[in-house]
Image 1 (cartoon, rainbow, N blue to C red):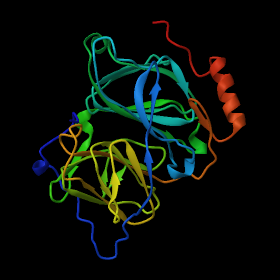
Image 2 (image 1 turned 30 degrees about the horizontal axis):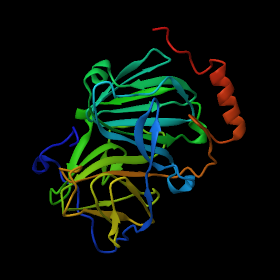
Image 3 (image 1 turned 45 degrees about the vertical axis):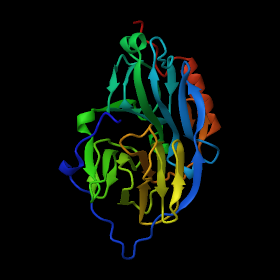
Length: 317
């Protein structure tokens, strides 16, 4: 169950989508996440990238970390690594992650909090579970999203936004059948607290079995629905979407999704979904590991800057 929840009857309600004249966004494609390992060996499911950058522009990568209930000594993180040219958004649904960086900064992301790191011109950082979690074990479930920066902002100074769990805005659907956690962007006229270089909307919804969620969506944004846990249906065709699958939606004014009546044991509260959308940059993408620029020459410069220590150096302690 997500750490951030509430009684839907006490939350502000999102407006009904006016049915007259609305063009519902259809499902263009369903993508099944690839299972892989990141960092020092923690499991992730990755719905993108899987080849075509234009499908998810301005988003570059989405990793679902867990959900996993670690035993003693099993929890893993990353080693020190660089980033340049984009933003990493780490949302901890359940569990704890610590981070440190080459500027001497650091902090803890826990139970519904979000760390928004604008890598910009370059930074080194490390993400690890705290020592007590490694020793004792425990639940770990989070999501990391990479958001591309436009060409003009690729080399902006690095910065952080720490969005604590109690700062995330909560809403419910008109029939109180869904809880929506708005991390960033605009949702039916409501603003999230995250500040973005690239216009996006990022939300997490829990939809009770058999209930429907319909939301207006900016026409100049793309729309992606990722199933974190459970199952449901997307779009006017009622396309089935299972655990670990993502629906890429087509053009329209709004989208609708519905949780299946029968949910698996992995989704005790209902269907858990990420709602993602952004205004495409329509810029060339040159990517090499943790560097995302516009040209191969800029990638070569990023590698040289990293190797020369111009992205920062690891603190001595």
